[in-house]
Image 1 (cartoon, one colour):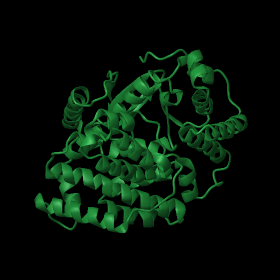
Image 2 (cartoon, helix red, strand yellow; image 1 turned 45 degrees about the vertical axis):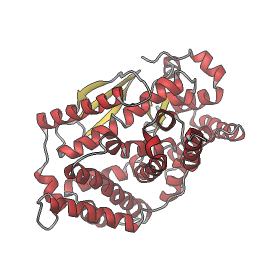
Image 3 (cartoon, one colour; image 1 turned 90 degrees about the vertical axis):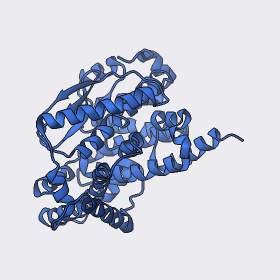
Image 4 (spheres, rainbow, N blue to C red; image 1 turned 90 degrees about the horizontal axis):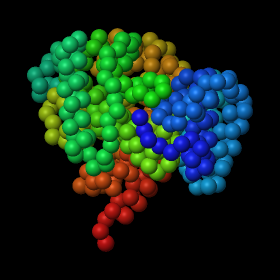
Length: 399
């Protein structure tokens, strides 16, 4: 349980942040994909459940909040409020925006498709790694993956081993102190392999689906992405420091399909490399393959939801470009057709590039408290992230 200021004090100290949280909570029952995690005052959550909110009124409040935040110089709150307003508008009229416009409005960014040269480079790299590891056939990458899949108790053990390695790193080497408050459980879901999920009112649960097979390298990637040093560590720093200590109310809630997701997913996409900078070819192949699949899924979303191509056409291309079995490709297309994940898919690609570039510029400072405290504890939006990282690094550089 987080020891934060009472709701009344938060309201007085950060009225605009509190307004964003309360708009989100009130809209959430009618927009089930809006909120991912909430670790703020329970009375705000309970109050939002006590009545059915008028989405029209919440839309007006979101627009008003965006204006107030903009005039006050809070780009984060302004962008988040606009994303909430957009989700309310789309709930009222699902055809209101085209696919690319919707991505840009939700994530407060300009859509730039994957660089073909980068995608080709990833493709060549994973193919070369698969052959280096002795894989053959028409698709050596898929042959390698299928031959190494594990499930059941073997997957459970691999996931827990990866979790323990990440936990040691986070508690012993991550320079911002936090307290772990996390449950671990099994679950059965149709799509997810493993994930971090919120349970009302204040539980975060690391859930492993032992029935979805993965390679050991992919399991390490997924655990680093979702737990350490990815999503859970990010949430812990935001809630235990930015919210509980600094009093930024907006840090107690994590929205979905909102600008904050871009940097959050960027942190998670580079997490395996931050945790294990020295790793072997099996891990390199598994992790780079997931990056390649992000590109494949993103372009599948553009073709399916943007260009209106048929599912069958997109399915075949996704299988080839993502080295996927028909079952995996169909699962990914199910996600792309989903109201949340179809637009959310862009966060992985853009976020990784933004965070990886900030890490590169930081150099050895990327392991330090100033940089990591800002990266994990800041309230970021894509548009200003690069400039903010430059200011943080300039301030940390001795003169």
